[in-house]
Length: 157
Image 1 (cartoon, helix red, strand yellow):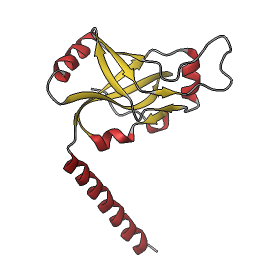
Image 2 (tube, helix red, strand yellow):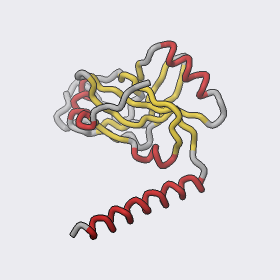
Image 3 (tube, helix red, strand yellow):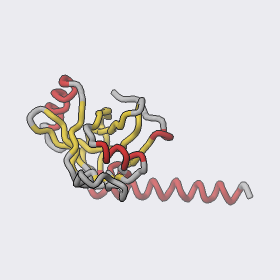
């Protein structure tokens, strides 16, 4: 299982994923990118919110991840912001994921993009969808934490 990446090397986070899913396991996968995509990632021109991962022919693909090209992109390349990106993982990890995703209710969602040793990596999670009442509980919990922080902040003044 992948360890938590350093927050200073984070490129983008999928904040919606924590609201919509319970995470069972986390994995780290490499990305197959074009040159203009790497440059755009360095500038932070990426959106993971609507992204999801599919398994096709024993390979992982990231769909719905928008990497917006820079205005200074090469003229001989026609960039496609919504291009499907291939994810790189070991074969045995992919086989394990296939078995778990075939179980009812499980899916793969991207959590974040980050740099590791100069390479772009995607942290993905094996996740189970939350029911509506679970989402309400998440909101209540978040608002409770905010209220406690607000009270603590006013006490320190």
